Image (cartoon, rainbow, N blue to C red; front, top):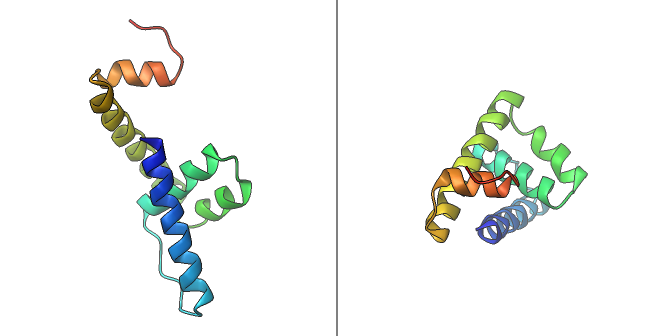
Length: 98
């Protein structure tokens, strides 16, 4: 699951760099792009990309986007594992099963 997110974000970054290098005007980022870039940068411990993504949208919008991304990731992973989202979320956080 996280490989798919990482692949998406890598493609996004590549396309953004191509646009910037082509001299085009940068477009505004939406909160989901910012969240995907922020989370993938955190996972890769890339402080420069973290700082960049935090400047794309307001802190509130980024928080909402990260929360939405977490929900979607847990649901997708739960479907892959054929487990409940609660079980998957607790497992990802290293919490004991209930």
